[in-house]
Amino acid sequence: MEYRKLTLLFALLFAVLVSHAQDHKLAVADSTAEQLYDAGDWKQLISFVNNAVADNADSPALRFKCGYAYMLTGSYKAAISQFNRVLLKDPHNTTARLYAYYCNTYINNNSTAFYNASHLDTATLHAIKLSPFSLTDAVLESGIKLPNNHERDNGFFERAGIGLRLSWRLQLDQSFMFFKQNIFRSGYIDYNNQTGKTDRQLEYYAKAKYSLTNSLSLLGAYHYLHTSYRNNIYQSNLGLFGVKYDTRYVDLQADVNFGKLITKTLKQYDARVDFYPLGNLNLYTIGKASVSNLSGAHSFIYSQSIGFKVLDKTWLETAAAFGDQDDYLDADGLYVYNAIDPTKFKCGESVFYQLGNHALLNLNYFYEKKTDIYRAVNYNQNSVTLGITWKF
Image (tube, rainbow, N blue to C red; front, top):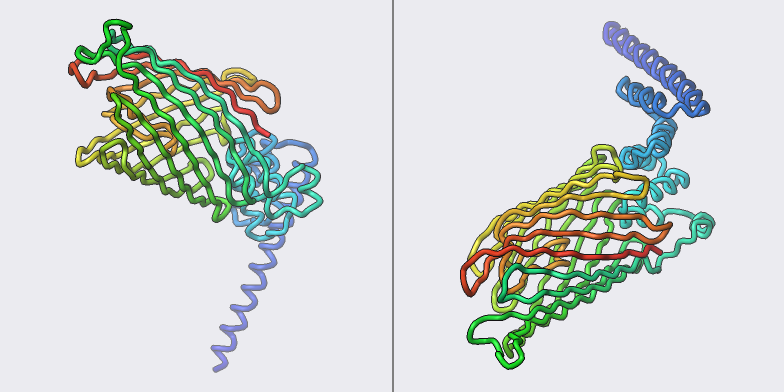
């Protein structure tokens, strides 16, 4: 019995000593971090806090200082990770919430930004001029497609879109689109006025995004297409359901598209990985793998893009897509590639320019290798699109 009492006494004494040593280690770490914070030595502060955490000296105060240092050095994804650690221990930390909101807006992650805004007090929301219901952005796009095929006229594409914040956790994007192209083919050409059959399409698209947590979101989209060609009218309805999970440097998304397009049944399964090695938009990559089932015909499509900042307000993005892109759905079902002729390969370059605090201009060029479905020959197509996004 005496042996057990001694063992228990030594165990308690050891626990007290360990706790005291841990408190001393944390006090020293807090003091050093405070000095680096006051001196504005952000890189050294980041290195010190990461080493301290690895050495089991961890606290919300250390995490906050590290997050602030990451934010000021432009590593917004890393800053968000640190602020999230603070909020796990102290969910009422208004400053951490506010900084997490700003960091998410800097990387265009509006859904998570608004999720953090929902936890801010009324005075802070009033100061940054935010409300649960508001316009978030407006988009205009206009494009022309130039096929190297004498039996295909130039195609024209127009899109007008608007984004709404319906609540702190729910955002809705809507777009109206129009596409038109004359199709010339022997037997269908009116030789009196040299016009062929017109492929004309009107479209409506809506996407809802709901934030479950500050890192997990649900996606839902609907796309309606009204297509007229050769005196026939087709009405297509497509849907999408997906989930997105954000981590420190990688965002993951999985979704399924389904519905009926023209006369074919379509299912498309997507897996997407966004990688931000610097924690911001100075360098990023987006990879997407898709498996499509079009009325029993299977195809695999892989797309890859890489973007980087080249000047103070200018970004370039290079993209390519491989595989049979017949009736391929891209950008969460926003763009539906169901033109008369399927695309077999696609690559291009986009340039983005920040015009003031609200406007973002974009110009993109794409080269496509397509197959004429009537003559079974390949031809090239060049596309140019000009767009502007206004953020409210």
